[in-house]
Image (tube, rainbow, N blue to C red; front, side, top):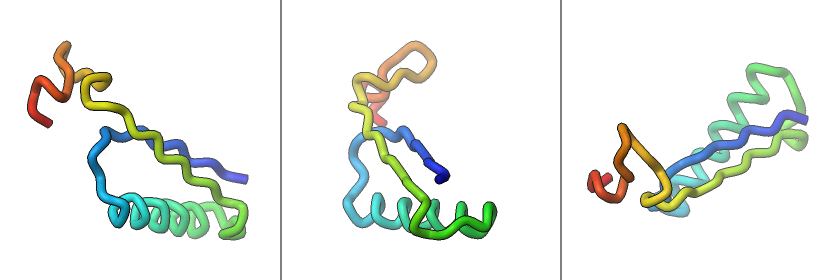
Length: 63
């Protein structure tokens, strides 16, 4: 059972997250030849103040 664990900054819409889950699932099915039902995709949203870029939080950078 393949599991894709994706970390991303908070702020994506439900539609964007739904599309990401669908496309990652399809990519794993195509690349690995596994049944669609066996694929798990976990989206972990990280608050922007907890995401650092070059020593500064993403929130401070206005991302």
